[in-house]
Image (spheres, rainbow, N blue to C red):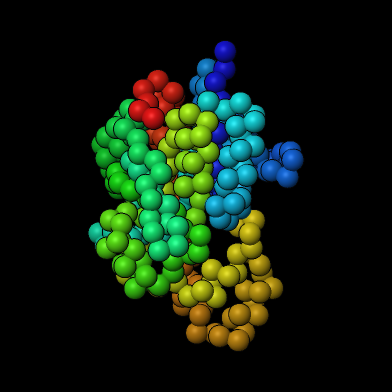
Length: 257
């Protein structure tokens, strides 16, 4: 019997880095693609868009499709000062921010993390194991990122992982999270640049052009953000194609949920 792993990604560019270009199918408001990892294990990738609500709905749809494990992947903000754009993070725990409190909602000790981490390091891919924290509002300033690191000791911050982890927990399924650092903790990203993305994760070109006309000084920030984003995608794609996709079947064999 074929087993299927479900993967949630937020942005179109993240999906391309992982599974390349191809035709996306539509079902019940979700964009998805199917592929095969090996003779017994298949993959279904859903492009959720930004945020916990979208990731939650995508994960629930994957559960209804009968997946036997859930994962999430994409870029993230760096919190640990030692991390640079392009560094890769394999989550061993997921923290969710709720207002002024932070709660660990998932902790794993799967063979998948051990195998993947060791293999990535052996191949010279900059990889780390540690906590990822999920927030509802993007953390863009260096000051806020440094404060969040002091508070939680998480390596990176994103807006989707906790939602996918929660669905996996509720369904009793194995889970994994793979992130690549885009903006380092010492770098602030102007809110105007983040606001150029819509909820589907696509660039709002008219908004972008209007913003640059009003504030031409943002061009340098935009170019830096693009450079860091491309570095993160390059590492993500390299890790996925050289190791992660072949390690995923281990997620189904040895997990500690």
